[in-house]
Image: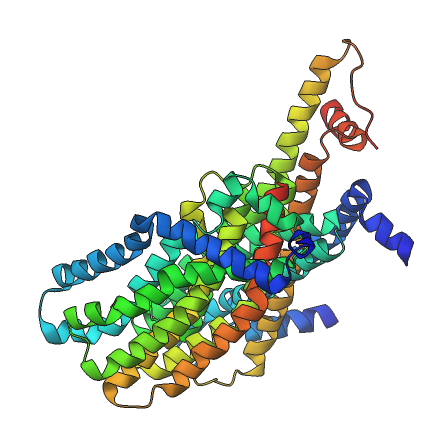
Length: 248
Length: 79
Length: 232
């Protein structure tokens, strides 16, 4: 048990294990993405109200789900690095922020494009959209704070504090935005009701959500590998790695 | 045999019967495809950027090490 | 006389800190006046931008007043720890035997007394200028009293995290504006309800709950942020 934790604290071990996870996880993820896309785009029937535009759901919902989960991954990694002073945890934390921001961005843009044919407008100040926009701001705040520090160790500690503050605040922000929307809900547009989704449409969606989780993990590991190499540039294992790369 | 039956069933379930209808999607094609295009670009970017970042860094490091080769071995032994 | 040599207790230490911050502020009255002046000027911008029609202004008044209060609190929160960080007295504070949690609260309380409290007290004047219905003014002041305290606490987190940075000013707004949103939502909703003649007490109660949560948790984050900034 403890030896596992010690290994987890060792950069070359982490670099290696991230590489070997990527070797099988990345292909599986790509296959799942491809199958999910083809399934969703070609083999499902159009929604009887929204027609074919609902097919955007297969990227919109997975991106939104994983973007939200990613913030918690980031905050947990931040908490681990603050409490147990584990340096590798803040590498993981730092790796989450840009991916989460990208996924939130995807969710917002695809949602906006989906909104045009469905609601007839690119943007609605709806509770969920507003919450996603705030989530994007939270992610970008973490990225901006990290970039502002010259000392990267202090940067990741500061980001860990900020992401923990965000974790406490996200439920409050969500609840208040929800509540704000219910207060101001315009009578003409009603789309908050949960619509039931047919099983034939649901399975590809679940597959895509799983694939997006896989993709998040892959990107996180890739980011961690890049970060580890930069942080450990002065050590032997990175130099060996660089030498091996140059000889090829 | 099984494969053939499976393919036949798959073909039966295929919703779009032609590439044109797939592109058009009953008028919603522009929205669907642009959403997928943007998402695809962003996803490719978040995979490619860290890979390139690592490779570039290692290449630069390798170049630095090569330049210093032959000189005094002032390289700090890491842990 | 030996009693004075002993380290002061937490309570008296915090009161001393609070007094010190207030005296420092009182020596530069222009810095106290700046947020109020900012408030007045931005209030003057809205009729210019929206047109002087009283009913239109009255519609937007709750939101306008709250957003301006939020911005002026934001603009001043950058300075809470900065001068003490630069002259090194913050480092002494971290080394002091008294719990950092309490001393941080003293800093924030001073900030709130100088900005939030004054803003809340002068807000009726500006509320009348942009035609906020009179029955809502009491709720506005009450909401601002509670809300600006939350804003000071949350702003303190941003200030603590960015105090060591050369260019903290813009960054702090990016970091903490998202956390201001619940306060804005409930603060302006309280005023809107008061205008419409509904009870505003539930909204003020929620603001009070937010304040309790912020008092409990924000000093922890501020203390952690200060330690990081001083170590860096």
